Length: 523
Image (cartoon, rainbow, N blue to C red; front, side):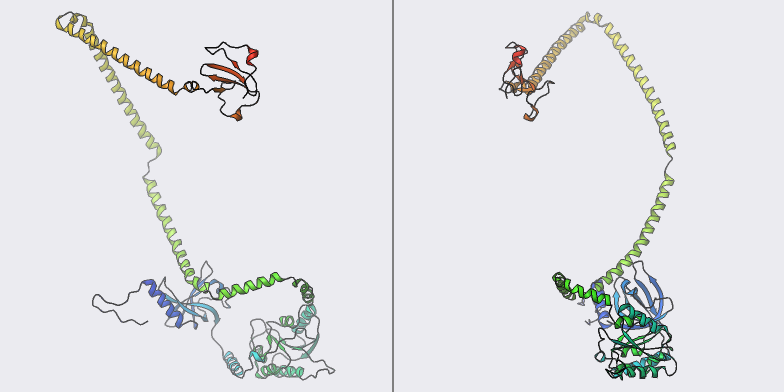
């Protein structure tokens, strides 16, 4: 919508757009105004991307427009774009917000530069089309299996042999040849006369009337094919009551008779294929009809496919939605490649700089060895100094202890020393008593943690021959000798046995005889 220009004073009430909103509005405006255009220009800087898309520019004397052809369309172009080629492109205009530019999305491309002959044919085509000679309503359907086929062509060329050979392979039919000249002066009149001659044959006469007519000629230049562009030939083909197939030239050749005929074949051989079906395929189709009686599954799939197609028509065109994303992906792809190469180069340079600053391990080890030797020498000297100082101090202490008995007997010093000895004896006694109490408390605590206290409450410890505890019923096998330890002694037993035997280790009961012990205990 139109907006008023923003006033110069502050606090304007002009609506604000984000960049994305403005880009989308421009994109809608351009696509709605130029939904389908035909542009003529010179190809410049064509480039096929790694994704398969083709990017190029169309230019003339004063202007340039960016263009893109998506991968699926580029593979079907009739013309391969090259630098300097003058072409006519058909497509639609759109914008690429990523670069703030408009561009042409190419759908078809053809060479430009019509000659006088092409202009003449174009004018004749428009005039005849205006008369209704090319209307689809005038065209007749081809018979499914014609009995007689009339061929209008040269009798000496390879075309008639190709047609006969192809008919013999597919479904042999009766063929009537009307020989004509297919190029040069008078060729158009002969072709028109042949078409009218086949239509003039009376049904049921001595000469069978064709059910289908094929007008055929091999490939050639535009001048060679002009006989089939003449108005007399076009009108004869349009007036033919017998269905007519035109097979003039090769696949890329187009003449005016192709528009007036009921069916156009790209080659004479293809015309023979259109004229008759394959006999073997017909036989197979008849046999297949029996199997198709049970083809309900196929019909169900077809119904589902139609349903999906109907739903798909209500959706947007995924290709249109993805075009902008595809172009942005191509752009990011190129930028990513450049960024990765630059990053790798910077990392390589940084590694080279750091590598130049590193010292060789041999130098580091040599320096460390020197520091270690220096520290070892200093440590040895310090140790010798400390040992000498301790020896000197111990010598002085020893000399004082030697004079101590003499000083004890002298005055108050001896008395104080005696008191000091008494206090040391008393402190040593208290220390010994304290350590004894701590030892007894630890022993009591350790005894409380022992399993023997649990045995006094009526439990027993079961061990095997190796004196390893038996902790589960699964470990006790029938006939396995075990030992039961109670709080007052041990008893030998056998798993699954029927008796008890008390060991001699019991302090309250003597050991029973060995035979008695073997009776075991029943669990």
